[in-house]
Amino acid sequence: MDEPFTESAAEAVDWQGQPVRCRDCRHEPMHRDGRCRRGRSCVRDRRARRVDRFFRHNPGMADDYLDHPYDEVRAIAARYCSLFRLTPLLDDPEPEVRVGAVLRLPQSRIGRMADDPDRRVRVALASRLEGRALMALLADADAFVRVMVVRRLAPDALVLAVDDDDADVRRWVARRLPSERLSLMLDDPEATVRQIVAGRVDVRHLPILALDDDVRVRFTAIERLPRDAVAQYGDDPEAPVRELVLHRLAEDSGKEHPDGTGT
Image (cartoon, rainbow, N blue to C red; front, side, top):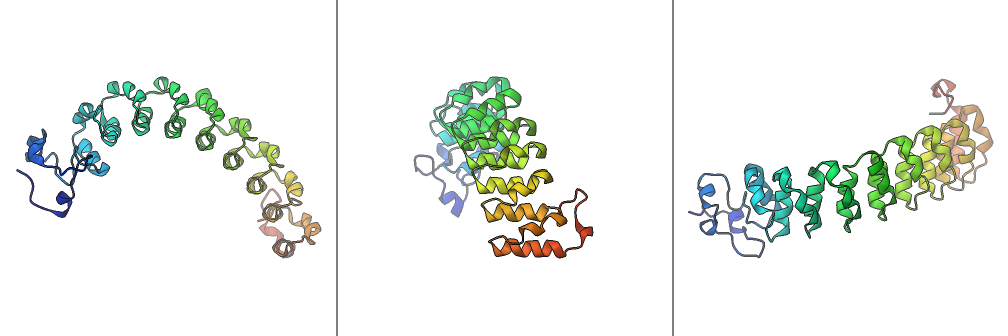
């Protein structure tokens, strides 16, 4: 029999908008055993959270739903199904299903997905690959994919992306590139990239950035300059920078970093 009327059960409809009726479901015996529940844990419900609960409690059922007409069901089933059933899902017409397969299959089986037309699949791929296979995704046309790549590549490999067309990619490069290689980005066309560089680059490069066209870059560079090198920037056209110079000149030299840069 159906469970007693509740608000959640009353809202239980399938992916085609039809009310879910337990007595019409082939899993009705499971319902009697408490392994599913209308309005909360139900594979026929259109709400993804309820479908996920069903497979979480009954993972052995996932293999039976990999060809379900509702793509949400297939995508969730892909999280719980047998690994041996995942490879065909790489060709599923729904990107989220392909994402599920990419996230679970061995790296050796997913390399071909670098040519997938949907960036969600390629982002998932970038979250899994390593080494040269990951590095190859720096050529991806989508900046979001390349961001994922530069967030995961070994820092020494990021020199390959210092001239990326997208500023967000370069910002991540500037955050992770070894500081001794940051001189490659001193003249980056994006001020926010140069500001990150100013906060990390070796102190010997700071005088260049202290004369930058952007006030944010100059401020960050002068914050890090040795105290005895800041006086020459006291006539900066921007008041916040001039105030910073005055503050740095007045500060206790004992507060400087061991490398001679300011606090």
